[in-house]
Amino acid sequence: MKIEMKRIFCTLLVAATVASCCKVDNSMYFDNSNNRVFEDTTAELDTLSYSVGMSLGLSLHLQSRGLTLDPEVMVATLGEELSKEALDYDFLEENKELMNRFNKECMQPYTMAQFRKNISKNEDSATEETPLFNEEFTQERVSEMFGHDIAGYVVNSAYPLNMYWFRKAIEEAFAVESEVLTDTLLRLSVVQMRSGLQQYHMNEFPAYNAETSRKWLERVSKQRGVNAMVVEDDTLYFRVNVAGNTVKPKGLNDTISISYDLYTRGGKLVESHAKREQILSHALEEAKAAIVDTAKVKDMNAMMRVTQLTQQLDNLRNMRMPVSKTLLKGMQYALQNVGEGGEITVWMPASLAFGKAGNRAVAANDAVVMNIKLKSVSYGPTEEELAAMEAEKQAKKIARPTLIKGDKLNMSKTPKGNNPAANKEQKVMVKPVSK
Image (cartoon, rainbow, N blue to C red; front, side):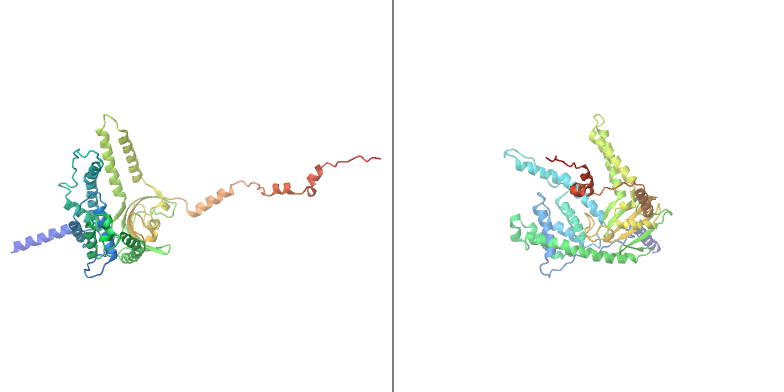
Protein backbone atom coordinates (compact mmCIF):
# COMPACT_ATOMS: atom_id res chain seq x y z
CA MET A 1 0.00 0.00 0.00
CA LYS A 2 2.84 2.37 0.93
CA ILE A 3 4.63 1.55 -2.33
CA GLU A 4 1.46 2.26 -4.31
CA MET A 5 0.88 5.58 -2.51
CA LYS A 6 4.51 6.57 -3.12
CA ARG A 7 4.13 5.75 -6.82
CA ILE A 8 0.96 7.89 -7.06
CA PHE A 9 2.68 10.75 -5.23
CA CYS A 10 5.68 10.60 -7.59
CA THR A 11 3.34 10.55 -10.59
CA LEU A 12 1.50 13.63 -9.31
CA LEU A 13 4.80 15.37 -8.59
CA VAL A 14 6.05 14.74 -12.15
CA ALA A 15 2.74 15.94 -13.59
CA ALA A 16 2.90 19.11 -11.51
CA THR A 17 6.47 19.74 -12.63
CA VAL A 18 5.56 19.30 -16.30
CA ALA A 19 2.55 21.58 -15.89
CA SER A 20 4.67 24.28 -14.28
CA CYS A 21 7.24 24.05 -17.07
CA CYS A 22 4.58 24.25 -19.76
CA LYS A 23 2.54 26.97 -18.07
CA VAL A 24 1.93 29.92 -20.35
CA ASP A 25 3.54 33.11 -19.11
CA ASN A 26 0.71 35.61 -18.71
CA SER A 27 2.85 38.46 -17.42
CA MET A 28 1.51 40.51 -20.34
CA TYR A 29 -2.01 40.21 -18.87
CA PHE A 30 -3.67 39.69 -22.24
CA ASP A 31 -7.41 40.25 -22.54
CA ASN A 32 -9.59 37.30 -23.60
CA SER A 33 -12.91 39.13 -23.41
CA ASN A 34 -13.32 39.42 -27.20
CA ASN A 35 -15.13 36.10 -27.48
CA ARG A 36 -18.80 37.16 -27.54
CA VAL A 37 -20.15 33.93 -29.00
CA PHE A 38 -23.35 32.46 -27.56
CA GLU A 39 -26.07 29.95 -28.47
CA ASP A 40 -29.77 30.80 -28.52
CA THR A 41 -31.98 28.59 -30.68
CA THR A 42 -35.15 30.46 -29.69
CA ALA A 43 -34.00 33.91 -30.82
CA GLU A 44 -35.48 35.59 -33.88
CA LEU A 45 -33.32 36.15 -36.93
CA ASP A 46 -30.06 37.79 -35.78
CA THR A 47 -29.11 39.75 -38.88
CA LEU A 48 -25.48 40.33 -37.83
CA SER A 49 -24.84 36.66 -37.01
CA TYR A 50 -26.56 35.62 -40.23
CA SER A 51 -24.59 38.21 -42.25
CA VAL A 52 -21.22 36.96 -40.95
CA GLY A 53 -22.09 33.33 -41.69
CA MET A 54 -23.61 34.23 -45.06
CA SER A 55 -20.51 36.19 -46.11
CA LEU A 56 -18.12 33.39 -45.12
CA GLY A 57 -20.31 30.66 -46.60
CA LEU A 58 -20.77 32.33 -49.97
CA SER A 59 -17.07 33.20 -50.32
CA LEU A 60 -15.97 29.64 -49.51
CA HIS A 61 -18.67 27.95 -51.59
CA LEU A 62 -19.11 30.11 -54.68
CA GLN A 63 -15.95 32.21 -54.90
CA SER A 64 -13.22 29.74 -53.96
CA ARG A 65 -12.18 28.55 -57.44
CA GLY A 66 -13.58 25.04 -57.05
CA LEU A 67 -12.61 24.42 -53.43
CA THR A 68 -15.06 21.82 -52.09
CA LEU A 69 -15.12 21.88 -48.30
CA ASP A 70 -17.21 19.78 -45.95
CA PRO A 71 -19.42 22.40 -44.23
CA GLU A 72 -20.36 20.08 -41.35
CA VAL A 73 -16.71 19.40 -40.45
CA MET A 74 -15.77 23.06 -40.85
CA VAL A 75 -18.63 24.32 -38.65
CA ALA A 76 -17.96 21.65 -35.99
CA THR A 77 -14.28 22.63 -35.81
CA LEU A 78 -15.25 26.28 -35.71
CA GLY A 79 -17.60 25.65 -32.79
CA GLU A 80 -14.93 23.74 -30.84
CA GLU A 81 -12.42 26.54 -31.35
CA LEU A 82 -14.87 29.24 -30.29
CA SER A 83 -15.82 27.32 -27.15
CA LYS A 84 -12.26 27.73 -25.80
CA GLU A 85 -11.60 30.39 -23.20
CA ALA A 86 -8.85 31.94 -25.33
CA LEU A 87 -7.39 31.43 -28.78
CA ASP A 88 -4.02 29.71 -29.12
CA TYR A 89 -2.35 32.14 -31.52
CA ASP A 90 0.75 29.96 -31.95
CA PHE A 91 -1.46 27.09 -33.12
CA LEU A 92 -3.45 29.40 -35.40
CA GLU A 93 -0.21 30.67 -36.94
CA GLU A 94 0.90 27.10 -37.64
CA ASN A 95 -2.53 26.41 -39.10
CA LYS A 96 -2.19 29.43 -41.41
CA GLU A 97 1.18 28.15 -42.61
CA LEU A 98 -0.47 24.81 -43.42
CA MET A 99 -3.18 26.62 -45.38
CA ASN A 100 -0.53 28.53 -47.34
CA ARG A 101 1.22 25.25 -48.16
CA PHE A 102 -2.07 23.67 -49.25
CA ASN A 103 -2.73 26.65 -51.50
CA LYS A 104 0.73 26.43 -53.07
CA GLU A 105 0.98 22.65 -53.44
CA CYS A 106 -2.63 21.75 -54.22
CA MET A 107 -4.95 24.67 -54.88
CA GLN A 108 -2.81 26.57 -57.39
CA PRO A 109 -1.94 23.51 -59.57
CA TYR A 110 -5.60 22.43 -59.48
CA THR A 111 -6.81 25.88 -60.52
CA MET A 112 -4.29 26.10 -63.38
CA ALA A 113 -5.30 22.64 -64.62
CA GLN A 114 -8.97 23.66 -64.62
CA PHE A 115 -8.10 26.86 -66.47
CA ARG A 116 -6.16 24.99 -69.16
CA LYS A 117 -9.01 22.52 -69.49
CA ASN A 118 -11.58 25.30 -69.97
CA ILE A 119 -9.62 27.13 -72.65
CA SER A 120 -8.64 23.99 -74.56
CA LYS A 121 -10.16 24.18 -78.05
CA ASN A 122 -9.55 20.53 -78.84
CA GLU A 123 -12.37 18.68 -77.11
CA ASP A 124 -10.90 15.30 -78.05
CA SER A 125 -7.55 16.00 -76.33
CA ALA A 126 -7.19 14.14 -73.07
CA THR A 127 -6.44 16.54 -70.20
CA GLU A 128 -4.66 15.01 -67.22
CA GLU A 129 -6.70 15.45 -64.06
CA THR A 130 -4.97 17.28 -61.20
CA PRO A 131 -6.49 16.28 -57.83
CA LEU A 132 -7.41 18.98 -55.34
CA PHE A 133 -6.84 16.82 -52.25
CA ASN A 134 -4.20 14.19 -51.41
CA GLU A 135 -3.20 11.89 -48.56
CA GLU A 136 -1.83 14.74 -46.45
CA PHE A 137 -4.43 17.37 -47.31
CA THR A 138 -7.67 15.41 -47.29
CA GLN A 139 -11.01 17.17 -47.66
CA GLU A 140 -11.72 16.62 -43.96
CA ARG A 141 -8.39 18.04 -42.84
CA VAL A 142 -8.63 21.10 -45.10
CA SER A 143 -12.17 21.72 -43.82
CA GLU A 144 -10.83 21.60 -40.26
CA MET A 145 -8.05 24.04 -41.18
CA PHE A 146 -10.60 26.52 -42.49
CA GLY A 147 -12.68 26.07 -39.32
CA HIS A 148 -9.72 27.00 -37.12
CA ASP A 149 -8.84 29.98 -39.31
CA ILE A 150 -12.40 31.35 -39.37
CA ALA A 151 -12.55 31.09 -35.56
CA GLY A 152 -9.54 33.40 -35.28
CA TYR A 153 -11.22 35.88 -37.62
CA VAL A 154 -14.49 35.79 -35.67
CA VAL A 155 -12.88 36.32 -32.26
CA ASN A 156 -10.55 39.08 -33.47
CA SER A 157 -13.53 40.88 -35.00
CA ALA A 158 -15.39 40.59 -31.68
CA TYR A 159 -18.70 39.72 -33.33
CA PRO A 160 -21.54 39.15 -30.84
CA LEU A 161 -22.51 35.94 -32.63
CA ASN A 162 -25.50 33.74 -32.01
CA MET A 163 -24.00 30.44 -33.21
CA TYR A 164 -27.44 29.12 -34.14
CA TRP A 165 -27.98 31.76 -36.85
CA PHE A 166 -24.29 31.80 -37.79
CA ARG A 167 -24.32 28.06 -38.54
CA LYS A 168 -27.70 28.33 -40.25
CA ALA A 169 -26.33 30.98 -42.64
CA ILE A 170 -23.27 28.88 -43.54
CA GLU A 171 -25.39 25.80 -44.20
CA GLU A 172 -27.86 27.72 -46.36
CA ALA A 173 -25.05 29.50 -48.25
CA PHE A 174 -23.45 26.14 -49.10
CA ALA A 175 -26.80 24.98 -50.50
CA VAL A 176 -26.92 27.81 -53.06
CA GLU A 177 -25.91 26.51 -56.49
CA SER A 178 -25.47 29.84 -58.26
CA GLU A 179 -24.86 33.47 -57.31
CA VAL A 180 -27.97 34.38 -59.30
CA LEU A 181 -30.09 32.51 -56.74
CA THR A 182 -28.47 34.07 -53.67
CA ASP A 183 -31.06 36.78 -52.97
CA THR A 184 -33.90 34.35 -53.64
CA LEU A 185 -32.79 31.45 -51.42
CA LEU A 186 -31.16 33.22 -48.47
CA ARG A 187 -32.87 35.19 -45.70
CA LEU A 188 -30.95 38.40 -46.50
CA SER A 189 -29.97 39.91 -49.81
CA VAL A 190 -26.30 40.46 -50.59
CA VAL A 191 -26.84 44.23 -50.26
CA GLN A 192 -28.41 43.81 -46.80
CA MET A 193 -25.60 41.51 -45.73
CA ARG A 194 -22.85 43.92 -46.82
CA SER A 195 -24.63 46.92 -45.34
CA GLY A 196 -25.01 45.18 -41.97
CA LEU A 197 -21.34 44.21 -41.79
CA GLN A 198 -20.24 47.69 -42.86
CA GLN A 199 -22.36 49.38 -40.18
CA TYR A 200 -20.94 47.05 -37.52
CA HIS A 201 -17.32 47.74 -38.46
CA MET A 202 -17.89 51.50 -38.72
CA ASN A 203 -19.91 52.03 -35.55
CA GLU A 204 -20.27 49.22 -33.03
CA PHE A 205 -16.84 47.61 -33.37
CA PRO A 206 -14.72 50.74 -32.66
CA ALA A 207 -16.97 51.71 -29.74
CA TYR A 208 -16.73 48.17 -28.31
CA ASN A 209 -12.94 48.20 -28.62
CA ALA A 210 -12.65 51.58 -26.91
CA GLU A 211 -14.71 50.42 -23.92
CA THR A 212 -13.12 46.98 -23.54
CA SER A 213 -9.63 48.51 -23.92
CA ARG A 214 -10.43 50.97 -21.12
CA LYS A 215 -11.60 48.16 -18.81
CA TRP A 216 -8.56 46.05 -19.69
CA LEU A 217 -6.09 48.85 -18.91
CA GLU A 218 -7.90 49.44 -15.63
CA ARG A 219 -7.36 45.77 -14.69
CA VAL A 220 -3.72 45.93 -15.78
CA SER A 221 -3.14 49.01 -13.61
CA LYS A 222 -3.96 46.94 -10.50
CA GLN A 223 -1.32 44.28 -11.20
CA ARG A 224 1.81 44.13 -9.07
CA GLY A 225 4.73 46.24 -10.30
CA VAL A 226 2.67 48.16 -12.87
CA ASN A 227 3.09 51.95 -12.81
CA ALA A 228 1.03 54.69 -14.44
CA MET A 229 2.24 57.60 -16.56
CA VAL A 230 -0.06 60.43 -17.64
CA VAL A 231 0.65 61.47 -21.22
CA GLU A 232 -1.29 63.99 -23.33
CA ASP A 233 -4.57 63.67 -21.40
CA ASP A 234 -4.32 59.87 -21.41
CA THR A 235 -2.51 57.23 -19.35
CA LEU A 236 -0.11 54.47 -20.29
CA TYR A 237 1.04 51.75 -17.92
CA PHE A 238 4.47 50.18 -17.64
CA ARG A 239 6.48 47.68 -15.65
CA VAL A 240 10.27 47.82 -15.54
CA ASN A 241 11.48 44.24 -15.83
CA VAL A 242 15.22 45.08 -15.98
CA ALA A 243 16.26 48.58 -14.90
CA GLY A 244 19.46 48.80 -16.95
CA ASN A 245 22.11 51.43 -16.21
CA THR A 246 21.68 55.15 -15.54
CA VAL A 247 21.85 56.20 -19.22
CA LYS A 248 18.20 56.82 -20.12
CA PRO A 249 16.63 58.61 -23.09
CA LYS A 250 15.83 62.21 -22.17
CA GLY A 251 14.50 63.83 -25.32
CA LEU A 252 13.09 63.20 -28.77
CA ASN A 253 16.46 63.94 -30.40
CA ASP A 254 18.33 61.15 -28.58
CA THR A 255 19.31 58.19 -30.75
CA ILE A 256 18.46 54.71 -29.51
CA SER A 257 18.88 51.08 -30.47
CA ILE A 258 15.99 48.81 -29.43
CA SER A 259 14.26 45.51 -30.10
CA TYR A 260 10.64 44.85 -29.29
CA ASP A 261 7.66 42.51 -29.50
CA LEU A 262 4.26 44.09 -30.17
CA TYR A 263 1.02 42.28 -29.27
CA THR A 264 -2.66 43.02 -29.61
CA ARG A 265 -4.75 43.28 -26.47
CA GLY A 266 -5.85 39.67 -27.04
CA GLY A 267 -2.27 38.37 -27.28
CA LYS A 268 -1.74 38.12 -31.04
CA LEU A 269 1.84 38.88 -32.07
CA VAL A 270 1.84 41.83 -34.49
CA GLU A 271 5.54 42.51 -34.92
CA SER A 272 8.70 41.00 -33.47
CA HIS A 273 12.36 41.81 -34.04
CA ALA A 274 13.38 38.29 -33.05
CA LYS A 275 10.84 36.80 -35.47
CA ARG A 276 11.94 39.09 -38.32
CA GLU A 277 15.58 38.21 -37.68
CA GLN A 278 14.72 34.51 -37.71
CA ILE A 279 12.81 34.84 -41.01
CA LEU A 280 15.59 36.87 -42.67
CA SER A 281 18.29 34.46 -41.44
CA HIS A 282 16.38 31.48 -42.85
CA ALA A 283 15.82 33.24 -46.18
CA LEU A 284 19.51 34.16 -46.35
CA GLU A 285 20.59 30.55 -45.80
CA GLU A 286 18.23 29.41 -48.59
CA ALA A 287 19.59 32.09 -50.94
CA LYS A 288 23.19 31.04 -50.21
CA ALA A 289 22.29 27.40 -50.87
CA ALA A 290 20.84 28.41 -54.24
CA ILE A 291 24.21 29.88 -55.24
CA VAL A 292 26.02 26.70 -54.24
CA ASP A 293 23.59 24.62 -56.29
CA THR A 294 24.33 26.75 -59.38
CA ALA A 295 28.07 27.11 -58.83
CA LYS A 296 28.98 26.20 -62.40
CA VAL A 297 26.73 28.87 -63.85
CA LYS A 298 26.60 31.85 -61.52
CA ASP A 299 23.02 32.88 -60.86
CA MET A 300 23.15 36.67 -60.69
CA ASN A 301 19.63 36.89 -59.29
CA ALA A 302 20.52 34.57 -56.42
CA MET A 303 23.69 36.54 -55.71
CA MET A 304 21.75 39.80 -55.66
CA ARG A 305 19.23 38.27 -53.29
CA VAL A 306 22.02 37.21 -50.90
CA THR A 307 23.37 40.77 -50.95
CA GLN A 308 19.93 42.27 -50.30
CA LEU A 309 19.09 39.86 -47.47
CA THR A 310 22.50 40.38 -45.86
CA GLN A 311 21.95 44.13 -45.93
CA GLN A 312 18.44 43.80 -44.48
CA LEU A 313 19.71 41.55 -41.69
CA ASP A 314 22.55 43.96 -40.84
CA ASN A 315 20.14 46.90 -40.83
CA LEU A 316 17.80 45.06 -38.47
CA ARG A 317 20.55 44.04 -36.07
CA ASN A 318 22.17 47.49 -36.05
CA MET A 319 19.02 49.57 -36.31
CA ARG A 320 19.31 52.98 -34.65
CA MET A 321 16.74 55.75 -34.68
CA PRO A 322 15.81 59.02 -33.00
CA VAL A 323 13.32 58.63 -30.18
CA SER A 324 10.95 60.78 -32.24
CA LYS A 325 10.92 58.11 -35.00
CA THR A 326 9.85 55.19 -32.82
CA LEU A 327 6.87 53.14 -33.99
CA LEU A 328 4.35 54.44 -31.45
CA LYS A 329 4.05 57.70 -29.52
CA GLY A 330 3.67 55.81 -26.24
CA MET A 331 7.15 54.33 -26.68
CA GLN A 332 8.70 57.81 -26.64
CA TYR A 333 7.49 58.39 -23.09
CA ALA A 334 7.79 54.86 -21.72
CA LEU A 335 11.48 54.56 -22.64
CA GLN A 336 12.32 57.42 -20.26
CA ASN A 337 11.82 54.92 -17.42
CA VAL A 338 14.54 52.44 -18.39
CA GLY A 339 18.31 52.62 -18.99
CA GLU A 340 20.70 50.95 -21.43
CA GLY A 341 20.45 47.18 -21.16
CA GLY A 342 17.01 47.46 -19.59
CA GLU A 343 13.69 45.86 -20.48
CA ILE A 344 10.21 47.30 -20.04
CA THR A 345 6.64 46.16 -20.70
CA VAL A 346 4.23 48.90 -21.79
CA TRP A 347 0.43 48.86 -22.05
CA MET A 348 -0.78 51.68 -24.30
CA PRO A 349 -4.23 53.10 -25.01
CA ALA A 350 -5.18 53.58 -28.65
CA SER A 351 -4.49 57.33 -28.47
CA LEU A 352 -0.78 56.55 -27.90
CA ALA A 353 -0.72 53.57 -30.28
CA PHE A 354 -2.60 53.14 -33.58
CA GLY A 355 -5.51 55.47 -32.79
CA LYS A 356 -9.03 55.44 -34.17
CA ALA A 357 -7.99 53.97 -37.52
CA GLY A 358 -5.89 51.04 -36.30
CA ASN A 359 -3.79 49.22 -38.90
CA ARG A 360 -3.80 45.89 -40.76
CA ALA A 361 -3.32 43.87 -37.55
CA VAL A 362 -4.59 46.15 -34.77
CA ALA A 363 -8.27 47.07 -34.72
CA ALA A 364 -9.69 50.58 -34.44
CA ASN A 365 -9.53 52.08 -30.92
CA ASP A 366 -7.65 49.03 -29.63
CA ALA A 367 -5.03 49.16 -26.89
CA VAL A 368 -1.75 47.25 -27.33
CA VAL A 369 1.06 45.85 -25.20
CA MET A 370 4.81 45.81 -25.95
CA ASN A 371 7.98 44.29 -24.55
CA ILE A 372 10.92 46.60 -25.31
CA LYS A 373 14.66 46.05 -24.83
CA LEU A 374 16.78 49.22 -24.83
CA LYS A 375 20.22 48.34 -26.19
CA SER A 376 21.94 51.73 -26.35
CA VAL A 377 21.38 55.49 -26.04
CA SER A 378 23.25 58.39 -27.66
CA TYR A 379 22.25 61.81 -26.41
CA GLY A 380 21.28 64.42 -28.95
CA PRO A 381 20.82 68.16 -28.50
CA THR A 382 18.06 69.30 -26.15
CA GLU A 383 15.24 71.59 -27.29
CA GLU A 384 16.96 74.53 -25.56
CA GLU A 385 20.23 73.76 -27.34
CA LEU A 386 18.45 73.47 -30.67
CA ALA A 387 16.75 76.83 -30.07
CA ALA A 388 20.12 78.43 -29.22
CA MET A 389 21.72 76.94 -32.34
CA GLU A 390 18.90 78.29 -34.50
CA ALA A 391 19.18 81.75 -32.91
CA GLU A 392 22.94 81.79 -33.53
CA LYS A 393 22.37 80.76 -37.13
CA GLN A 394 19.90 83.57 -37.64
CA ALA A 395 22.28 86.11 -36.05
CA LYS A 396 25.08 85.20 -38.46
CA LYS A 397 22.99 86.04 -41.48
CA ILE A 398 24.22 89.27 -43.23
CA ALA A 399 21.68 92.04 -43.17
CA ARG A 400 20.95 93.21 -46.70
CA PRO A 401 19.13 96.40 -47.71
CA THR A 402 15.64 95.73 -48.87
CA LEU A 403 14.21 97.54 -51.86
CA ILE A 404 10.62 98.49 -51.37
CA LYS A 405 8.76 96.97 -54.25
CA GLY A 406 6.73 100.03 -55.17
CA ASP A 407 9.52 102.64 -55.21
CA LYS A 408 10.70 102.16 -58.78
CA LEU A 409 7.18 101.93 -60.13
CA ASN A 410 6.14 105.10 -58.33
CA MET A 411 8.99 107.05 -59.96
CA SER A 412 7.84 106.08 -63.43
CA LYS A 413 4.27 107.02 -62.62
CA THR A 414 5.12 110.42 -61.12
CA PRO A 415 3.91 113.29 -63.36
CA LYS A 416 6.77 115.13 -65.02
CA GLY A 417 5.72 118.42 -63.54
CA ASN A 418 6.24 117.07 -60.06
CA ASN A 419 9.55 115.37 -60.83
CA PRO A 420 12.51 117.77 -60.34
CA ALA A 421 14.95 115.51 -62.14
CA ALA A 422 12.71 115.25 -65.17
CA ASN A 423 12.13 119.00 -65.22
CA LYS A 424 15.88 119.64 -65.12
CA GLU A 425 16.55 117.51 -68.15
CA GLN A 426 13.62 118.91 -70.17
CA LYS A 427 14.76 121.30 -72.97
CA VAL A 428 12.79 124.55 -73.57
CA MET A 429 12.19 125.33 -77.24
CA VAL A 430 12.68 129.11 -78.02
CA LYS A 431 11.26 130.53 -81.20
CA PRO A 432 12.63 133.82 -82.74
CA VAL A 433 10.26 136.78 -82.64
CA SER A 434 9.68 138.45 -85.97
CA LYS A 435 9.98 142.25 -86.11
